[in-house]
Length: 132
Image (cartoon, rainbow, N blue to C red):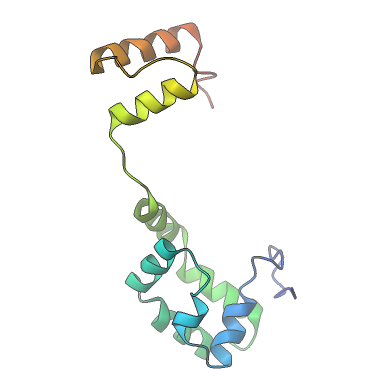
């Protein structure tokens, strides 16, 4: 894949397909066809089609398009996307899953026993370096 020219562009994660797709009249549905359904839903909720068209109308090169796209899809939108995508689970379910991944039986433990198990793991250093 051809690079857009930005120093951080890897070619495979470049905005060039969006830039060229909009220029050649591809529909937003076509542009987002290969995108994860949850990401597509999120982008549609953020009025992606209108923003992509506006950005494209005001840029002349893929590099400028990338800069404008990532000015719009900034850290806040990444955080919103991550929150949108997150599959929420209860604390108890997450604690049981973590203990299972650590090779410990947790199915029969009460919430209080789960808390004690993590307290012991923490005290013994079984959860790793706390500075990480």
